[in-house]
Image 1: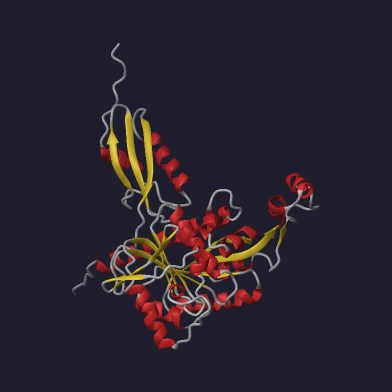
Image 2: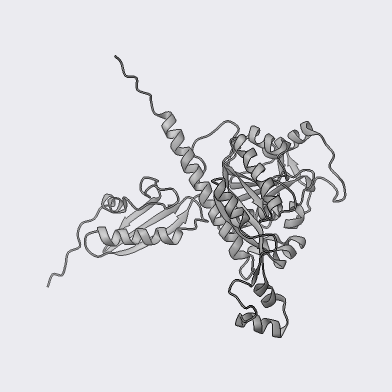
Length: 394
């Protein structure tokens, strides 16, 4: 006659029920991390928001399931649950000398040698982070061989307002490159001190505004620019791009050693040109008979033969394991990726339907996770450093 009375529930009850539900990457529970927001309790309903540390979180679905399962198991009675998933990119938590105001994370993308697709990966990372809703800048620090303007299809001249240089804005990114300041055919000839000044100007005088991520495309090798960056500002970390080829891996190893000597965290390795997917190529570019064979997957005798490992197989993954560096993923050779870069439409490589999209977004998600892990580690170290030291008196 009177029905069942719902148990009385408070926000504290909801938070207690979520104690122990952890962010799998950060290894701490969501409540302690301050990720549970806007708890609302109504007539038979519980609604809350989980505010992730990056919109590119690869474990978003798992975290939502864990939250729902914990609430269903631990709250008294039955409740209709609404779990909203949002994200707010975080920086390292505490300011350091040399920080650029308004920029939460600075990621350097380097390689031990040229020709491994470093600039393509830097642009792809920037566009990938933007595709998840982050505010992103892309700085071309490859002063002698600037290629970012061509990859993104931008050729405007930067303007100054007062003493601040305004970055070029294209395809949703804020951009700065030496390529915007020179004629395309003109070579850059300068010594180290001038190079140092250019990099400092790009970092400090450009009006970057508020950014979640600033991606910096480094020149190949271990020269002046990485040293200048490491001495000028506290980098969130570095990404090293290489191919599976042994000669590229040797130089990538040197790049990792350089970053470690400069005390720059290595966020991970990307294996570019990992393989050539013959089936994908036939489906995309083949004639009717070739496409028919590709769709039926009867073109090869053995499973896996559709992937041609032209430069070797799994070299970067193995080297990352040996050097205790995260492996961010592999990106295959793909005509569409090359064509979009040549056409100045690099962002198209991450659009739905692009054969490169799943590989590039996989790399971006793993990188975003490593950035969050690195920032959490720094925040914990800063918190420990602030604790008063107790002296035991005899």
